[in-house]
Every structure is written in structure tokens, then in C-alpha cells.
Image 1 (spheres, helix red, strand yellow):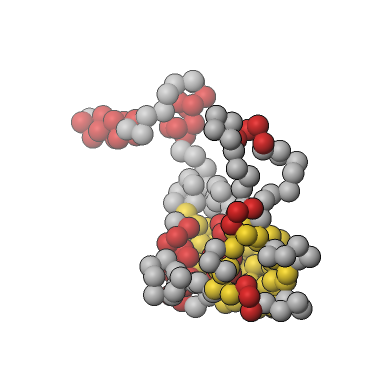
Image 2 (cartoon, helix red, strand yellow; image 1 turned 90 degrees about the horizontal axis):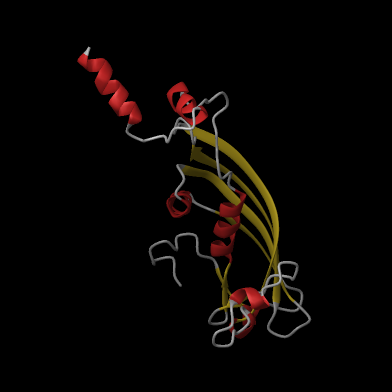
Length: 188
């Protein structure tokens, strides 16, 4: 992985064999190109700032690592009602575990359903260490995505009455209903 690959503008690869027993502390801050790339990757209007404080340390089990992080970001998302920009401050703490690729997901037997081994109360399996590397920039972008408001709404934004009336009446709302109504008013 290199920063020259499309979508890897915020790539910060760490070689796991270079992590000492005391671990590794890093502070990442996205530059303008990285913020634009992350916004495009997340399909949001913009990433105005993105910083992360990270501590990556080996665990007792050989080949396993724990990443403890804190993300601070400011983003612009489109309002779900008006499509106008909605600014959001994000402050997220997270913990991720990494281990050998072979431990990332239990093997299923032929014909065995994933639901048979999936325990919702169990710890998540570790993320795989691929090629002896962990891309901390990718992890930060993933955690930022998890911190986004799934339905950003500008204060005071209301659904138009035409949609609300049809929904309350139990009618199916057509995306072309407003156009048909507009066309009917222009004929008059």
C-alpha cells in the first residue's frame, strides 16, 4: 500500500515487526488532499479536520496487537431533508484488536451456516494483519465512518407538507408526485 494508490491518500502503514514491547504512539492529522479523499470515500460533503491519537501495542498472545485510539473530526454532511450542509463535531474513542489473517474469521464447514457459529455476545474476532502491516489511516477512516450521524438533519428542517399528508393518509409516496402536482398547477 502506498499513498500513490487511489483512495490511499490517508494511508499510514505500520510494519508490525517494528513495534517494540512498549508499543508505538502516533498522532495522525489529515492534510487537505487526505481530507478530500476521505470525504469522497465516505460520500459526505467534506471533512474539515481529522486528527487521531493512537497507541498500538503488542498483546500477550504472539502476533496480536491492540490499538487504542481517539478521533477528533469536523465534517459536513448533507441534510436528509433539505440537502443543505450540516456540520458535525465527532469525538470517538475506540479499541481495535489485530491478529494473524488465519484467526480473523472462524472457518465454516461445508453446508454450515454462519449463524451457527456466530455469537452476538462474544468478542469480535481480531482484524487481520495483512502482509505484516496495519494501515492506521484506514482504521481511522473506518472509525470516522462509524461516528457519522446516519441521518443528519439541519435544525428546523421539516419534511414538506405534501409528503407528510400522503404518508399520513397511507398513500404510497411517489418521487414524481411533486412533479405531477407542479405540472398540474402550471396548466392552470
